[in-house]
Image 1 (tube, rainbow, N blue to C red):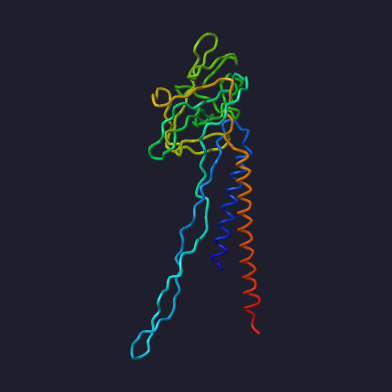
Image 2: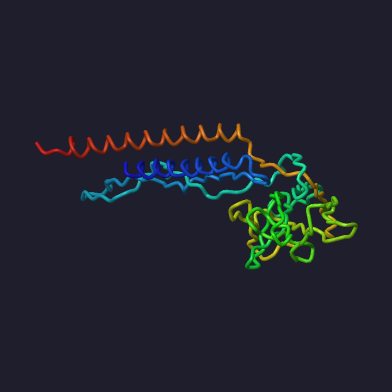
Length: 278
C-alpha cells in the first residue's frame, strides 16, 4: 500500500510541473520570438514483485524450504524528465517600427544525431561581455545609440562587436546588412545551432550555448535565412491547445489526488479499526 502512496504522489508532482510549464507558455503567448516548452514524461523503472512461501521437500523426514513465486511487475510512477523548447517558426507580423527585426528561417539542415532541424538566433551581449542568443527582434536604441534588446543586451554584428547607430533612420537588408546615410554600418550576426538541444533557455527570451559560442550562419552555404525590418516574429504558442493540455493535466492531477486519498482512508482504517485490540 505504501508503494501506492509514492506512485500517486509522483503522478501529482509530474502533472503539477506540467501545469506550471503550460501556464508559462500561455503567459508568453504575446512575447515576440518566444518558443513554447514541451514536456517529456517518463515512467520510473517497473518493479517485479514476488511472493515468498514455504515449499515441502519430498523426503522421508519432513523438510521444507522457501521458494519465490513471481507475481508480476508493478509501476512505480512517472516523472518529468525534461522540458524542451519547440523551435518551430512563429508567425510574422508587421509593426512599422524600424528597430523591429524578424528572423525568418529559410533552408535549415537537419542534425543527423537528433533528427531535428537546426536553429538560427540573433547574437546579443550583456554589459559583462557574456554572449547570449535570442529570437526576439523587438530591439531599441539606447542613449548612446547602440542597438539593444529591451533588457539592455547589445546586439552584435558579424565581427561580434556592438552596433552603434546615429538614429532610427536606417535600413536592414534581407541578409542583415544595416545601412544609414548612404553608407554601410554593419551586418547583423546570425548564429546557427546545428543541434537545437545544445542551447538552453535562460529567461526573458534568451538562450545560452552549452558548448561554447555558436558558429555564425554567415558564409554557411547550407543555411539560408532572411531578416525582415519593421516585422516581428510572434510566439509559437498554440493557446487553444495549451488550454486543452492544461485541463487534461488538471484532471490527471485530481485523479491521482483521489487515489492518494483512497489509500489514506484505507491506511486509516487498517490502523484505527483492523489493528485495534479487543
